[in-house]
Image (cartoon, rainbow, N blue to C red; front, side, top):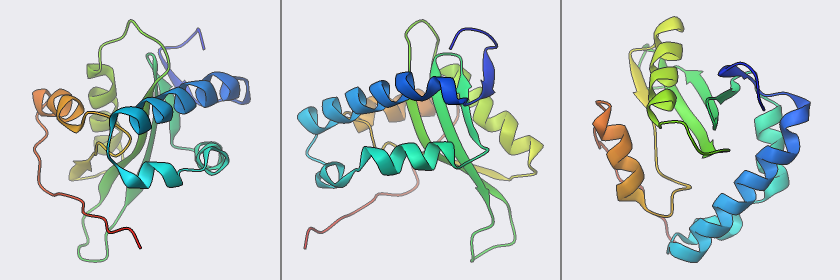
Length: 144
């Protein structure tokens, strides 16, 4: 993982990414009431990470995003898919700066992020809000 401060995910990153994601998921399951977390399949997550050319190591973070045009508009959006800290020592600002830069490069007008994997939604949201993001939606689930 040492090297460039920003690069695409490589095969050699697999173990550290998987360990960090598993630890993050376990922490979120233990500290959160989010029912959907118990449906997460780590093999599916790893396949998702390695099937995209928009999965990056940025500072000490894994950052995965999509660029899309939602069906209700002609505008391009950048949507954060997954952010996970892999190592300590880097400010979260590297994540928001990276996402905004990638959005500008792709001609996007909006960057959307979320707190799905966070065990403390307010804490993570505050990091995004500090960098100019605003809360615009709430997700609701019903267990069947």
